[in-house]
Amino acid sequence: MKKALIIGGAGFVGGYLIRQLKKDGYQIAVTKMPQETIPGEGFEVLDLNILDRPAIETLLEQVRPDCIFHLAAQSSVYVSWKNPGLTIDVNIKGSVNMLDAVRTLDYKPRILLIGSGEEYGHILPGETPISEQNMVRPGNIYAATKVCQNLIGKIYADAYGMDIMSVRAFNHIGPTQTPMFVTADFCRQAAEIEAGKREPVIRVGNLGARRDFTDVRDVVRAYSMLMERGVPGETYNVGSGKAIEIRELLVQILSMAKTEISVEVDPEKLRPVDIPIIEADISKLTDCTGWVPEIPLEQTLQETLDYWRRKVKEN
Image 1 (cartoon, helix red, strand yellow):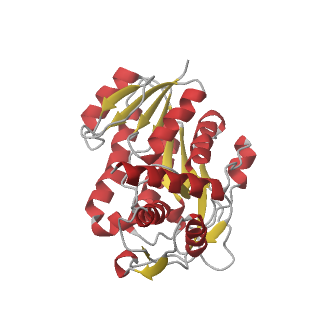
Image 2: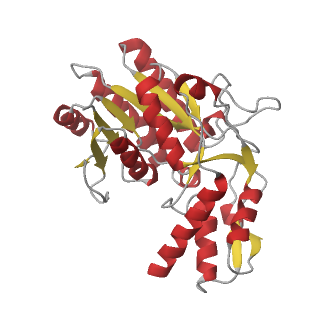
């Protein structure tokens, strides 16, 4: 049985990836920060700070994984504007610590580095849908750190013969996502309004931006398939292949709400720079693995709203 190591598994994607890899027959070890928890059973949980290079070396010698999914990141664009230093430390220094620790091993596990569709940044007319060959022009701190991770991963793959692949994951959504991300934020606000815990107004940022949304369960299935079939040194887009306006996302959520809700722009939710459209060309991933997204957006939104209804009721 192959052993998978998920670095940074306490976040939104980690739990879904654990379930996917269990389904795919892996033995699983997962790292987290000491203050975090990872519910569930049937996998090993280990504490790790990726800014502590010696600790990474010790953990790798202990686990000796066949493959590594590097999820650990500061993944919020909003937070990256507020705390660029933290974002740089975790996303660049942490990734280099991990790659360099793997380089010292006496064998070569496969590595999947998780990047972002935000890396493409300022998209020019005619460049959508965006292929992996498109020039990257990052428009925010988070995106810049992910571009750097991707470039360093490619350098390590070429210079040291390491088995490294990268993905650029576009917006992935679903139940349990934190409300610092737009879909969860809208669903939480709607659930609180339904429960009478806030006035019937959803506060929003830029509704005109168009983004490529994919259910997180489809995303982690792509990660698992790439670990089996991906080509070392390559980068793959993971997304739905179709961008929609944030406004359309909101309209769908409001249509599912059980009460009348109005909308108000909150200046605090507006970013200093916002890219008009980000849409993935997923043909490279599909050609390599056969993966296509399966879960419709309407189902994802309904299940996310229902999750927040339950969570609001519990509190």
